[in-house]
Length: 64
Figure 1: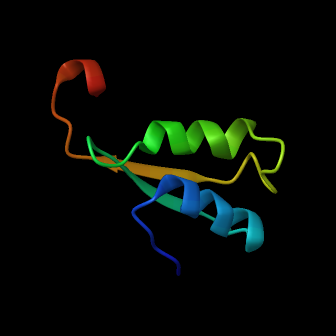
Figure 2 (figure 1 turned 180 degrees about the vertical axis):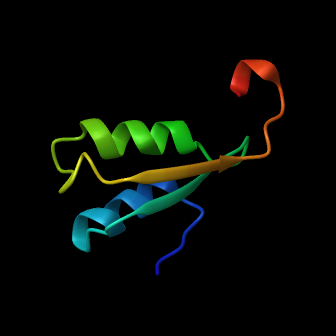
């Protein structure tokens, strides 16, 4: 298991040592959606189809 609060570092870790599954947060302090976009679209991503579970405390209907 690896953990970081920095999405850029998380992506570098994923490139260096690909994971079988990714858990991420979506909050004002962590851009989980941006991280997901990077995982899926960056040419350096070793597995753009990796399963991702994203959690959030956002309760506004536009975020659900």
